[in-house]
Length: 326
Ligand code: COA
Image (cartoon, protein in one colour):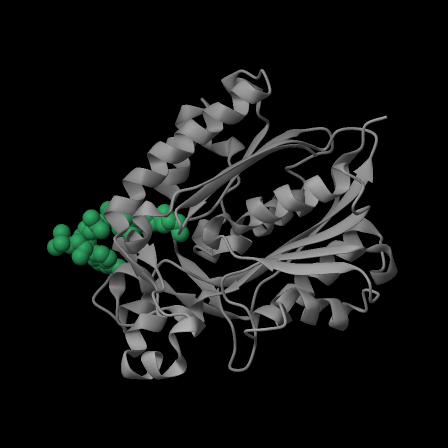
């Protein structure tokens, strides 16, 4: 008998502080109108002083566990997708394991695939479950991009926000995750990166503080993202023998409303079948898909049995998709 991974519950958490476009007008040469028209973003959430990725991830995980009706002792796999971990080591997943009281002996690790991180983590958890390596997985996407933004660069600081989303995946006889499709290509790394990392040493960061912040050639990334996401949704439909109109909900990575609209057009889906949270959350990188999923599950749009297409594109470049029967 085949074993599949099914989503049993979702949860999310947003930091309390909201930063509006008007507030950013006071920081950099920009306008509420430009940000809304070019990106679809009206506001984003930002962590408080001292609040970390692990803090908001833990809150999202608790909400997902409550929704799924499972306790810490039920979880044997925890994967956190993030590019903004709390410490160099141990993994933030291990810190969250301890905080949630998930028993010692479970598997916990982080995945770094930038904005595609949640799709990568979902793929990994699905493989663990289907091959019998785990029965119940907590999969989290959480980011504190506000810590790695150059608040003087109007081309990036208006785009991102902080947040966390989580799902509980469980072994089941009926299919949940139907297929996942992951890809990477490191050749265009300079188009989107944070060029500093710990292996370069803290001294390198101190002599060039800007190297610890996000840099992006937005217009070039935009064009590649639209083309690449179009291809990966085609790949997903073909792998499952589906037609364009067969998808109930597109739950895309929330980078830019114009990128999402282009993918929806490719799928011949009206925009009211696309879960959009970029207006309120901005781009929360690895957190954006589980956040959007949780919003649409809790407001009743996404119903059991429906077919969801999740897709993301991010630094690396990395990109991927997942077809899920909810
Ligand atoms: N406010 C006002 N003007 C701004 C601005 C801001 N916040 N940011 C950039 N501009 C200006 C630019 O300086 C440029 O001015 P110029 O024509 O005088 O040189 C002009 O707006 C157009 O810039 P451009 O970068 O070509 O705009 P765009 O239409 O491509 O939109 C992004 C910019 C960043 C919104 C868009 O490119 C984008 O969303 N990129 C992809 C993001 C993404 O998917 N990332 C990957 C996943 S994380």
